[in-house]
Structure formats: C-alpha cells, structure tokens
Image (cartoon, rainbow, N blue to C red; front, side, top):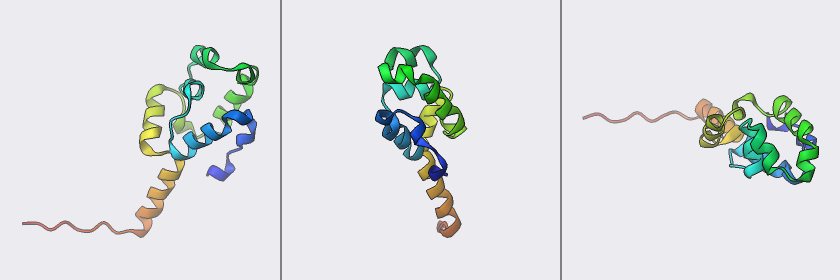
Length: 107
C-alpha cells in the first residue's frame, strides 16, 4: 500500500520523483532511474553530493520500502512504467471487482 511506504528515508529533493515512480509509474530522473535499475556505477555517476552521501539510505529505501516488482533492472523499470505503478494496479483490481465486461456480439 502506498501509505505504508516511508519516503522520508530519502533526501527531500528526490522524494517526489521516487513517489511518482513507485505509485504512478512515472519515469524518474536519471539518478533515480540508475538506482531503481540497480546500476551502481551509473547511480554514483549521476548522484549529486547529497545523494552520494546518502546512497546507503537510498538503497535501504529501495530494498525495504519500494515494491520488489519496481526495481532491479532496466526491463523491470520499463514494465513498471508500462503498468502505471501501484495506483494503476490497485485501480485495475478495484475496477475488476466492480465492473462487468460487456459481452461482444457475434455474427
């Protein structure tokens, strides 16, 4: 659940980008892309001073707070974006429970 995710573990200037990615599947900036794709070298190359100093805490957030389905590789990130994040997943399951699919007419 999005309300269970503690974004306060992240440096303030990347919280919104991380939250938009996790909850809505919106592609984050280059630094967060590298982190969510589990690309260590690229993460440090794109980190500002604050993110470099806080890298342990950022990785702790990803590992312990972010859904496992949203991080780990570039392919995983692309799929998470395509699906629309946590909010899209919960909206689809809510809609599926309350909406009926209309039958198609034949011939």
